[in-house]
Image (cartoon, rainbow, N blue to C red; front, side, top):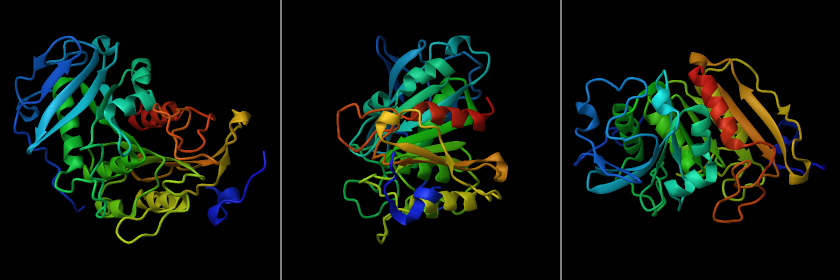
Length: 342
């Protein structure tokens, strides 16, 4: 295929401040399975010991559930999927928190990413939280759609804490992944919840400038980006805008390489053209010699749009070209598994 010219000449070189992190609970979280009702007997902080492998509190068994919790005066909901093999597991399960795009929902995130199917294959628990009215307080100060009075990092911390009190979760294997605004929220949560999240994957978003203040005092964090060069929503070349701009893809790689004290180069690695008919190519840049055994990866998707690799938008929105070169969700889980030492 013929390479078109792309911004910053990268076709050949492709490469804490903020709100409190405590979840205010005015009522005991309620767990609603598809078939029966169960209400937790105590909030997470009242649980003395985590359940042993395979044990459950309030969840009747593997399957899909909705958890409802009050954060201040705001009712919050998130979906939970417990994989089929959980009850027979010999070790605590990893936990993945998946964050939807703006105007989205946990249900749409589940349909878009397919992480529920991967949860059965690899044995991890997955949560799909809902933002408030479809949006996340990721740190941007100028978006009137965002509820700046509520800390979504605190909400995510509550999701992790509650599920860890009710299920056998490996707290060293808690991860967050998100699409677009959800990816930006995952980055903020990974920084702000210092040490609670071991790795973050951000799809169709670069590193927001407004998230960097939450990260400056944080520990090294493994981060993966998947970014299309033809993304019309979050430009590959970045967006310089006072208060709520975005770093470029290259700057995002550099930022996290420096944050994690990586001491290796990240030369571009052209990936095999597994789907010649899709009109995209993939170039991978990675830092792997980083502090605390962290890693930083950037999958640059030439001619890719504001899309999730291998996964068309479930409601048919045209956000540009979807790369078929790889399954983004599977690659993300492989990245997380390596962090967790599976």
